[in-house]
Length: 422
Ligand code: CP3
Image 1 (cartoon, rainbow, N blue to C red):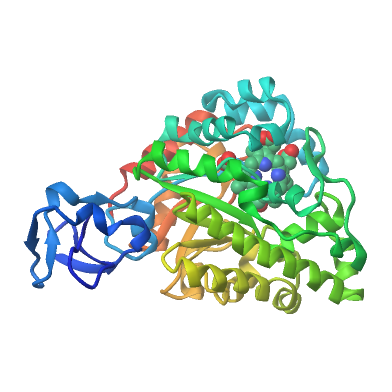
Image 2: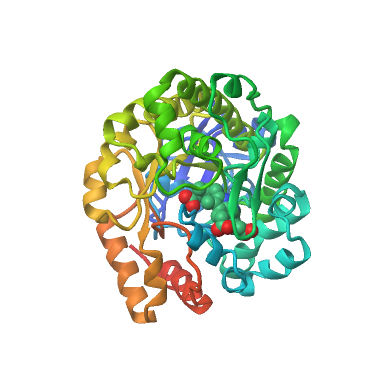
């Protein structure tokens, strides 16, 4: 869809040409369209009588993903996939770190070669050139509609004075798990430009490389999920340590959650300022909480992040993912995010209905479907797209790709998805 910058007031309004060429109007952020670029260009009048810049010179195609999230007319749902599916099961973590995993994830995306050359996850995810190269691997092969930054939700931790590593065979490890008020006092607020300048640099390069042909996606961890890692000391099965803290010293946990909320809001803003066109918030373990505890220990902090970011970046789409979120959907909608990413345990049509028509949905094909036949994969894609209905849907798996997924099936997934038309 073409968007044309209006060169007279109001400054942020655009005249858009949909496929049937009937102009409609929508708001655009001034950030993405510096006014000066259009100042001396020829103008013409759009049907509603507003002077706009001439289309040939000034048209800017916005990524399909952004148009879809904003409820604009799109010809098909945008599609992208995530490489990582977090696991709390140490056995699965071990298996996923095996060579089998790497050949699955990488073969086609050449991640394996990079993993061998740079065995440390932190090195791969904290070096601008490597981050850019790894982020672009799926883009170069599948041309998805979303290109997610290669990083981790834990990346900000060392800057917050919480040393960690992601170790082959073990997963995330927090060297000094936080358990007391004193421990929480030692946590520093995050200053992204100071502690993770490589993230901003990588996002800026990614924006140039992808050149609006897809949306560049940033991401952050949600306060409760980050807290679960730093209190448990790593991945967890029963979340006993964070629950002990929540239910015996709630003030200590709230103090930690508040630090994460303030810090992650800043981090989202930083990512957007440096090129991210949408940001996904991962509250992967929020669904370990009962609804009443979600309302106390996760919802207010998610809402705080959304409210803070909306003040400075009202047009930045925020996507919320929580695995196993069927019991919490209505509460996830209360956070104010633009998109809720559904896992496959929720029926897409029911999820859509429960979330309401203002929120876009993402998902939710079972990653296991990619182990089925090509016909089966096609059928399941069609089923999800039909249930999601026209528009406001980002086609995706219900979580990241899992171990051993045949690469040709990933290719088939994208081929079918990109060939869809509403
Ligand atoms: O497609 C992409 O490149 C996505 C980038 C990405 C990673 N982590 C890279 C990564 C994203 C979006 C994440 C988010 C993340 N990290 C989450 C939320 C998503 C979810 O799965 O719910 C969580 C919970 C983490 C924490 C974390 N990091 C875990 C549980 C693991 C897996 C440990 C293991 O060994 O399997 C990681 C490591 C990690 N982060 C990997 C990747 C590709 C796998 C290890 C590796 O490649 O070396």
